[in-house]
Amino acid sequence: MKVLGIETSCDETAIAVVEDGRKVLSTIVASSLALHKQYGGIVPEIATRHHVEVILAVLDKALKDASSGFHDIDVIAVTQGPGLIGSLMIGITLAKSLAMTIGKPIVTVDHILAHIFACSLDGGLPQFPFLGLVVSGGHTSLFIVYGFQKFKLLGRTRDDALGEAYDKVAKILGLGFPGGPVIENMALQAIRRDKNMFPIAKIKHSFDFSYSGLKTAVLYYVKERDTLSSQEVNEICYSFQESALYSLIPPLKNAISEFGLKRLVVGGGVAVNRRLRELLQELGVELHLPSFRYCMDNAAMVAGLGYWVYNENGDAGFQFGPYSTFEERWSLVH
Ligand code: KG4
Ligand code: ZN
Image 1: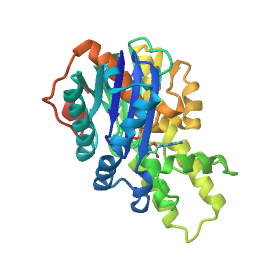
Image 2: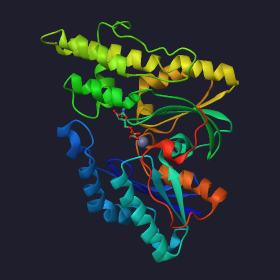
Image 3: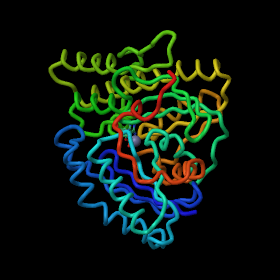
C-alpha cells in the first residue's frame, strides 16, 4: 500500500511516498528556514506563504521520485497538528483537495507521534510497549508507547523545549539560527571541558524537564563578560550541551526502572546530536533512533505512521481541521 504523506506544521514543506509503512520511495523537504534567519526564529506568516508557493512543486517531485502518478497512491496522510495553524491548513487543504479529486481516503497524523515512529522507516518497528522520547524545537516529552495511537504521557518540559534551548543559547552567543548544529560543532572544539559551569535541572518526583534556568544561567554568564574569545564561546557551548543533555538522563533512568521497560525510542530534531546518541547508548537499553534524515521534520514519518493509523482507523473523512497543541488533540493521563 502506497501512502502519500504531507507535512507542513512548521517551516518545512515536505511530501513523501512510503510503501507499507516502512519503505521510503521518495521524500522531499523544502524549507523556508533561510527566510527566518534574520528574525532569529520562525515567523508564522512567512512560513505559511512559503508553503503556498512551493507545495505543488514539492508534490510533483515526490511523485516523480517515487515513479508514481496520483492513481498509484492508496491513502493520503497529513499532519493535523501540533503546529502553526496557518501552515497546517496548507497541508490539510492539499490533502483534502487531492483525496476528493482522486477519490482516495485520508488519515490524520500527529506530528509528535510521527517523530516517535520515524525510527521504523527503512528499519524495524520496535516491539510495544516502549519508552518514547521526543526532543525537538517545540517539544520535549516522554511517553510509554503501547500502540500507534495508544500512549501515556510521563513527562514533558515545564518551559522551553530542548531544541528551543539550543536555539535561544545560540541567539545569546550570536551564533545564528537554528542553534543545535552550530552548538554541537563548537562544543567539539572546546579545549577546557568544565561540566559544571551551568546547572543541570533536576525536578524531584517527576519525569518532567526544564531548560529555562539553564538558558538564563548562560545569559547571565555572557552578560557579565564584555567580550568572549572564540575558545570561550566553544567552552560555553560544551558546558551548556553537557548540562542540557545530562538533564534528560535521570528521568529516563527512573522511567526504565520504574516501569521495567527495556526499549527506548528517541525522535525529533535534537536526536541527530552525536553527544546525545553517546549518552543514550550508556543507558544499556535496546535503543531505536531514526537515521539522521528522518530526525528533522519530514513527510516520510507522516506517511509511515499514516499507514498504521489507516489500518486501525480507516478513512478520516473531511470533517477535521488543524490543532496547535498536543493537549488539544489527546486527553492526557499525566
Ligand atoms: O524536529 P525538528 O526539525 O522541528 C520541530 O518539530 O521542532 O527540530 C528542530 C530542532 C531545532 O531546535 C534545532 O536547533 C534542533 O532541532 N537541532 C539540534 C541539532 N540539529 C537540529 N539540536 C542539537 N544538536 C543538533 N545537531
Ligand atoms: Zn518536528
